[in-house]
Length: 317
DNA sequence: AACGCGGGCAACCGCTCGTAA
DNA sequence: ATTACGAGCGGTTGCCCGCGT
Image (cartoon, chains in turn brown, red, orange):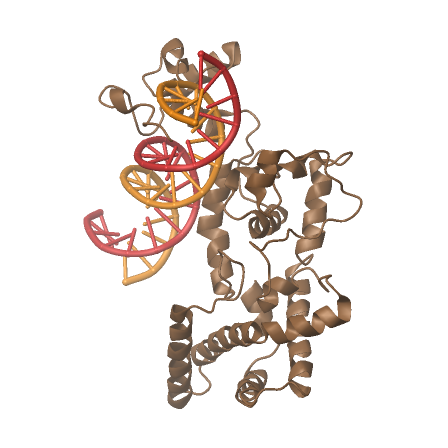
C-alpha cells in the first residue's frame, strides 16, 4: 500500500538540512510543554518550518533527554554483534536492548566500525559466517600470489608474512566452511542438538543466523506473550517479545545474550578458534579425511610454521 | 598552506506496517 | 475488503572534520 512522502507537497517551503540551535530549542520547548502528540501538526504548533517527520527524527535521534552520547563500550559492541547475528538489520529492535542508544546511532556504528571489524576477520557481516564468495576466493588467489612473490623477494619482510597470514585466514575460513557438514554430523552425534559452545556456528560457518530456529533460550526465561503478528514477523528470529521476560531486567537479558552467544573476551574467542582448529585436525586424522585434505593440511602446517598464536590474537583484535 | 581523501555522523528518502474509517 | 493516514524502519546521501601528502 504505502503512502506518498509526508512532506512532498510542501517541499518548496519546508526547511531541510541541519537543524539550528534555535530550531532545537523550539522543538524541545514545545515537546516539554505539550508532548509531541501528532507529529504532522507539531511543527505548525511549535512554530517550526519543518515537516513532522523531520521533527520526529530530530527528537528521536538527538534531542531526547535519555540519549546516551559518546563512544560505544566493548560491552555494547559485543551486545550489538550478538543481537545482529540474531535479529539482522533490525536496528530499532537492537536499540531496545541498548538503553540510550538510537537505532540510527547503532546502524552508523555498525556500518562504520563493526562491519569492517568482521570483514577483517574474514567474516561476512551480513551472515556472520566466514566469507566464501567468489570475490573472497579471488582475494585468496591474489593473496597467495602476493605471498609467494613477497617470500621470493624478501622472505623476512613483515609485510610478506602479513600477506601470508591473511591468505591463511581466508583459507582457514574456507576449509571450515567446506568441513561444515562433516563437523555438524560429528558434533550432532556427540552432543545432540545442543551447540557445544556459543560461537561455534559463527566460527565454523554453521551459524543459523537467519535459520529456521532461534537461538536456544534457557529454561529460566519464558515468554510472557507472543502475538500473532510477532509470530508472523519473527520467522525464527527473536523479536520484541524478548523485552517481556518475566522478572528479568534488560541487563539480565543482555547478560544472557552475551553469555549465550559470544565468548566473554576476544581471548576466549581465540581459544575457541584454536579448539576448532584442533577439532578439525582430529577430524582430518580420522577415517573421513578427504583426498584433498592433504593440500589443506600442508597449507595449515606451513602457516603453523610461519605464524604463532599472536596471529589469531592480532586478527581478533 | 593547500589540497585530496576517507571516515563518521546527522539527516533525508522511500518504503512498509498498523490502524481507523 | 478497501482506502487513507500516521508512525516507524532501514538504506542512502551529503556534509564536516581530521589526516596525510
